[in-house]
Image (cartoon, rainbow, N blue to C red; front, top):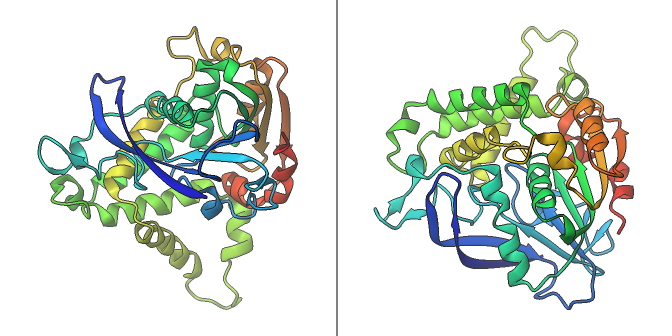
Length: 334
């Protein structure tokens, strides 16, 4: 995948206009030839715009999403730590990183940059739009706002509105960030690192399920006095996110944006909004996903005209969308 960067100007729902804002995206070729079918991938919360990095068994030459045969696009959404405009970017008024002064982003704001990239690339149709988790939020927003642009839509482990349960998990993560005194001090981009480690550990717990921990983190010694393997795993997950270059302020921005997710806002409600989608739609849920349970997927499919619903089984909860690639590959056809 090829890394690209452009500068854009776009208004936010809060009233702020971000000017000369960097936007990073990856494509499978330098440009679209107008012939190849287009697959557009919307990435998850802490992923980046190179799906070969975080979905290696799914995306690449000869893979289910074949980068040799199709024109594949993925945009790093605003607010992320991986190159696009975010709290880590320089505030032109202060000459310093935005940090806690970064304006409030909504899911709708994030999705609003996709048409800018689409037009920049000269794309006049998208054959398959894919979104998993928060990427599903973005994909649904776009599919509702421009229904005629898409031939097929694939939503995996996602929902049309943030649920109270998901909102609770997000609030706990914010509380972890806020409990770190260096986060509020906002002296530099490294503030809140301890809080971010804790927030990420909590998030991973919500992404997995009982069986996932039983299968991968159980103590090998039956006579262990104090179980410590899973504690080490949780601490490692927090540290790994920091090593990947994520910072607490970007994470906080995205957590706040999650609360805004509501495809039905200003559109007559969720059911009416989903009814606008005209793409051939497939909804996939994971049976052990606690933050996007199957009941949400089934309801979503019932509201989208002609949508087909599938449910896959996984021992890995929500993270099944990253792990169960063999089961998901059959839905990638265009």
